[in-house]
Structures are given as structure tokens and as C-alpha cells.
Length: 420
Image (cartoon, rainbow, N blue to C red; front, side):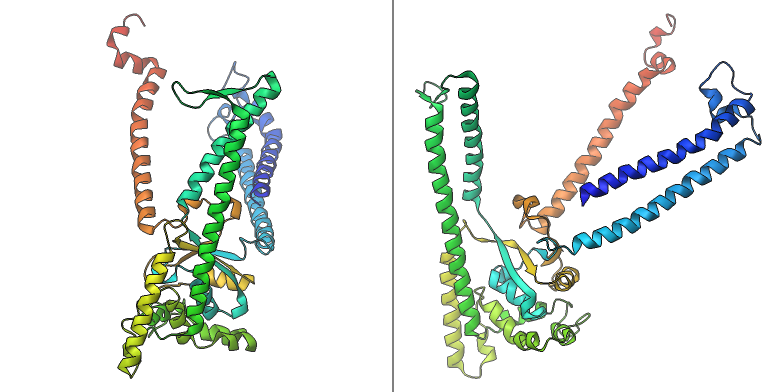
């Protein structure tokens, strides 16, 4: 779509230039034969400067200006109609970025696939959410991949040397005083070993994620009452208000009712129960759950169970494969995706902010999960550096520009006044 839009902009330039050429077909003769100001300059004789003040020939210039700008506005209007039509067609295509949203700054209790999916299932119909994936921290895997890319470049270079020059490439095993070895066999063995290590790392990350997901689903199906944690999720599960007592807009229940899908509404269940289950799957401390029980014995049992789950999950979640504060959610229809994109999902500012999902091949994973504070500081630093660069750039440019005329040069170097 971007490439087609760029081509359309080039076409706009061609069309507006064609209008200017047509205007020059009658303006040049008027300037040439009706003007009397310029002499001995063929170029200026074809310009407006050849006409004297208040000359009747300037009427043609005004008419040409109206024609030019009128055609430009007409072309812009047509291009907007074209962009609207084709943009809507493009956004309606079955591409993953059109049916997905990106969530940033996730709260701790929402950093799991199950919590994300169940949250949006409570906001919309159960069959409206296809998948929810929380991004993972993979520093080791990223480092291995970078090393592999560098090794592949060396391996391909060695093969090219052998193909072009016909001689076996050699390299030293150490920076100083190392043994000379044949590059291709060594690089090949190192590449195979690194591919194996990368595969094992990926399998381990996937296995840990599936294990955490299974634990979360078991916790959700158990349906424990978790007290305060459930209330926090309940306040945000509607996605349309900042205060649970005074919601803004409509609630998740009203959306399901308006949807008219009896089956989907039946699967939705009670929002409060679902919210409690969603918070439980993220290992919330349930020390306050006794407030929800009339029996102190039941309260103590829930407290011990919640603490045990938190300890188990803290052992499972390591730095490699631990969840980031960002997630991608994919929906089954465009309506749900756009409603989720335009809704407020948390009462805290900058938490669970929804954005358009980029194409999978254009995701900059190093920026996924960056906190809002880091983004704001980065933007502030960027603005400060840009302002400083503009100020510092003005000084040398002004100094160099002063050399472009004799008067400025004499002012800087008065000794040159007599020779000049």
C-alpha cells in the first residue's frame, strides 16, 4: 500500500506539472511580446518581470494562478477519494496486522497469555478472540542469533574466496599468535553447533511457556476467589471506564447483548467471576481473600494456596523466556479488533495502551516491552539533541554563507577592501 501511494504521489506531480506547461503556452508569448522592461536577457523576457506595473498582461498571470491551484485542489480531492477507497480495501484484507492489536505497558497481573485472552473474551464474545501472546524476554537467544549472523557472513565469505580465487581460505584461531586453520570446515562445525544450541534454547523457551500456560489455565478453571486482586481486574475488564462505579460508555455485558449472539453471550459468563479467575492465573497474592468468605478456615486455605502458586511460578519464570510488558492480540473479525483498538483497557494512565499492530516482519523486538517512562525520556532526549543540532548547525552555515558575497567578505577581513 505504501509503494502504491508513493507512485500515486509521483503521478500527482506529473499532472500538476502538465497544467503548468499548458499555462506557459500562453503566458510566455504575453510576457515576450507585451513586456518592455527587460532587454538583452532572453530568459527574463519570458517571465513576469518583463511586464511593467499595472499592465493588463498581469490578468493572464492571475488566471493562470487560479487554473493551477484549482487543478491542484481537484487532484488532491480525487487522490483522497482514491486513498479512502483503497485504504479501506487494504485494511479489510485478511492480513494478520489488520486483525491484531498491540498492547503496551501491561500490569503484572496481565502478563500471561491466558489472562490476556480471558480479559478480551469478557469484553467481547468468546469466539471473537483467536489468540493472545505476551512477548518474552530472550536475551540469550538474541545474543546467539547475532553471533550466528556474524558467523554466517564469515562462512559465506570463505566460500566466495574459494570459488573465486580457487584457494582454501585460512584464519587464525586467536587474535595474536593463534594457529592457522582452514576456515570453511571450522566455520561449518561452529555453525552446526550454534544451530543446535539455538534450537535447544527455542525448545526450552517454548516448553517453559507451555508449562506456565498450562498452570494458568488450571488456575483459571479452578475458579478460586482471590479477593482484592479480582477487584483490580474487574475494574479494568470492561475496558470502557476508569471508575467501576461510574463507567464511561458501555460495558462488556452490553456489548455482548447488542451483539445478539446468544451462544457467545452464554459463553461470556459473569464478568466478576471471570475477572477473579483471570487475576488468579497470574499468581496474585490472595492474602485478602478472607474478606470474601464467611469462614476463617476457608480464608486461610485460600491464602496458603495462593502463596504456594506464587512461589511455584516465581521458580518457573526465569530471565530467559520471562514475559515482557507487551502483548499481541488477534481477533476473528475487524469489528472486534477496531473496538479493542479504540477502547480504554485500564484505569491507570499509560497502562494497557492499544495500538495498531505492525507487520510481523517489521516488528522491532528490541523496542517491544519498553516502559512508557523510557519512551518519554527517549523522546525528550531526541528533541533536546535535535534542537541543539539545529542551533549548532546555524552558526557554521551562517559563517560560510557570509563568504558568498564580497560585502560580507570585506566585513570579516577588512584588509581585503583595498585589493578588491
